[in-house]
Image 1 (cartoon, rainbow, N blue to C red):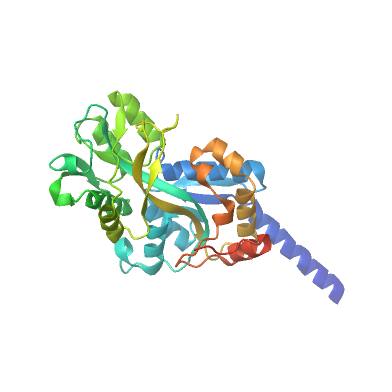
Image 2: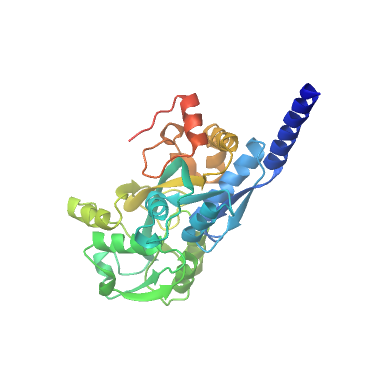
Length: 319
């Protein structure tokens, strides 16, 4: 009887685990049209097609909201830059006194780039030329974007007081205001669908190359410590980049709730690590995805399932 009872209990445990794994994996992202949404959609596609994980994208108002949803366990997995993830976890910066202690890092995905863009025929050639011009700003539902905007302005020796700010709630609205002619400059990640929309709508856009002098980079990093400057080269999918230019970069992460099953985390990471080509075919941003760099030292702890995965793969934590 004891043997039968133990066997029955074990079978019940397996059944419960099977039922849990049959549940779709929620991926929290920013709204459709943003780069974060595109990242989530690419990951969902590969997890579904290359693994046994049914994944679905669940857009929210912005990455700030997405982080909170993952922390609460309402959504399993999300995406964020390293600074926003750190501030959300600690309850500092834009998350002042609102810590999210259940967030756990899963992996570094790739370097992320962002820049200001203008119409092709705009006289604005540098950040310094933006003085007195109108800029989409505020980003109340994506507060980290205000920090990004301030950091890029600082690289050109400007502050928000030096431009005419037009308040918008998010990146999408900023581009809409740009298309409507109500702002001279807005910001977005190259390669996003909304950027291509703007390029087609106004007859061509042009990204502004940033100053990469030590003083300029230092001013940028004072406001966004995990950022760095790097070159972006022209590519068919990069509207507005017709020559090599320098843009602000920072690493982008995938993270999860601490209570997500370790085995499921390991499955997620295995599928991602083994399918760079499929990820890249879906979203060219994954060209810079390096499986050997997924485990990069951060001040936000890695999920126990992620640590176990990297140990099994022999991937050491990098600086």
